[in-house]
Length: 225
Image (tube, rainbow, N blue to C red; front, side, top):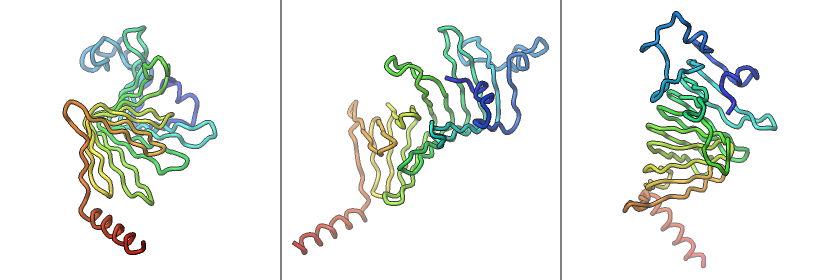
């Protein structure tokens, strides 16, 4: 994964609004304290090489159209540290907009996130956005109405426009609510594969007005036949 620091050098891709501190020489100079003031990895003695607040990043498709937009209140990027820790970027209050050529965009919010590379050997180096804590995905469709998907965590694969979670998921639409133990979603086609496991089945609650609409439609079809 190109680091955010490298992306800044490309120009036009990333907009940093607010305080920006780049480089170990700035963050951790000899005069800097090494205690609580030093930014370190959660579970290892690795130091960040970029800290920024008010970040907006636009990822473009090869044809120049917008693939996705990522906004975060703040980021902390950690470099790769041999095999002990892979390069990744921690995100606070990430807001993610995923665009599709033929469908309305998905707007995805969470309280925490991490941008990294997938460890799947079949897709080495694939970019993945891990989101957790109050993850909400919303799509507003002119014909199908609003679709809202919520869970405790999601893994988003922007280039495949694919998302999945092993956590309990709730799907709210104009027609009702569906709950499942997990989900795999093709965000391009809107095809959702729901998972039931450990005794938790896929459960759907249809709103009463949709029953009435269905009954009216059936009655009209019977009358016309």
